[in-house]
Picture 1 (cartoon, helix red, strand yellow):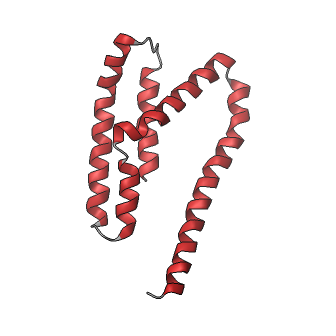
Picture 2 (cartoon, rainbow, N blue to C red):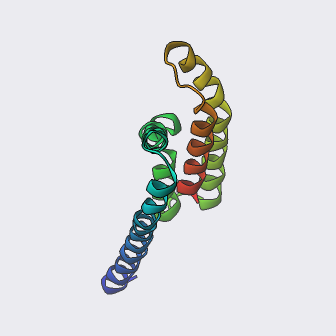
Length: 131
């Protein structure tokens, strides 16, 4: 592969990542007025807290497996299918263990009735990031 082909490939990859990242942010921006119209201030605060907390602990509980899968899956150094399969196994294990972890946290912190929403949002964010 020549240097020019590598730069063209790099440009295409940067374009794909830019479009995907920008589209998620634009959709979030467009949906925000719906959230604020239909939800009370308290309900919106709870949703924002659950989303922020799940995004904060995502790298810790998954051991950054999503970033590792992207890095090793694209590089060609490893078998992409085995990288993807192992990543999915770790994500499913995290989704299975999270309800038990929330029960332990519930002993120390009052998380109210949002624990199952938190588990659902966390697992959906995991699979969304992976795929």
